[in-house]
Image (cartoon, rainbow, N blue to C red; front, top):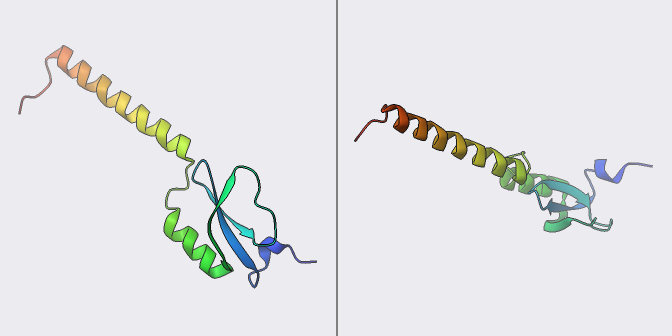
Length: 91
């Protein structure tokens, strides 16, 4: 028996979870908890194209948010240190 996830002739859905991660899912299989339909049902290639167009950043949404916060914190710290050292430039 062929794995339905590998059947490129099958009908699929594109699912998305709370982290913004996408998955091709066989149309006949129940949608697992924590995932919602984003596209389909359609053919394998159409679903894959949807994923490629809509899922540009493979990092989970929580990681993106944490990295954004960390970068903002570093910038605030650097600005604070420059101001304390008198090295901030006036425009």
